[in-house]
Length: 89
Image (cartoon, rainbow, N blue to C red; front, side, top):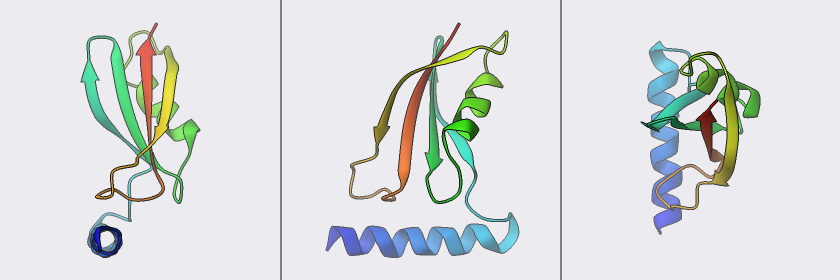
């Protein structure tokens, strides 16, 4: 039941985003704390390169080093959502 709700919710989210802005973002900042940045990307529309670019754009100088990668396992999130943690050098 939770999976079905998540799938329907994702479908509605994608439909809403596609209407005016062009769809799901390639990557987005999930959180920032000190020199660590967590970036979310969706396998269906982007990849690790987009996540790295997003993290590097928030590091000064442009140096972001990946620390770890985790697929989202929460049933309320999309199945293809991946969260990557970066540390600014």
